[in-house]
Image (cartoon, rainbow, N blue to C red; front, side, top):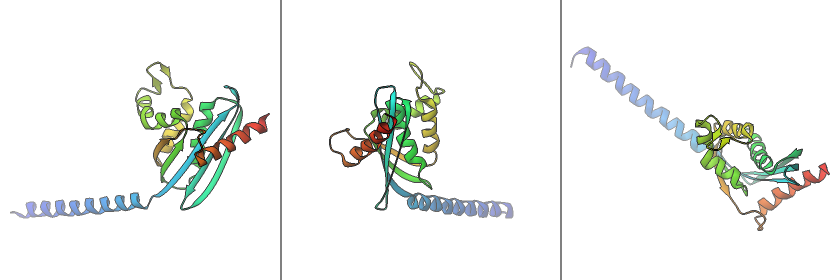
Length: 175
């Protein structure tokens, strides 16, 4: 082996070690990412009509609640805003278990959003409704690892019931 071949072999070995160190650092960062649960719900009195959203954020045994709404909106917008506001309340990247009774939200995040984005935010049937909210959820997906889960609403799921109470309380303020 001549000197140039030896130098190249040394560089490759050094590069291989650097790649291994980088992979180790990435795995550590992934494992260090906090795990957060966010429960959300949206409600609307009339569709459109006054609406509200609520969320419960749970991390390391600590819970925080949030709610808000709009005087004239739709139920789907409130479902999306509950998730958006819950995710925006996180102060650093996290692995998120997002729990909602909205199949629109859950299927949108888990099944539809990548296709919509590839097609320029269009569905096969036409434009994506609430596109600005879906784009915000897409932006938040780039920050957080989100796994959305569906639960049946209004059947006694404690966190879902509490989120519904938060959302309805906001609607009551608009009346």
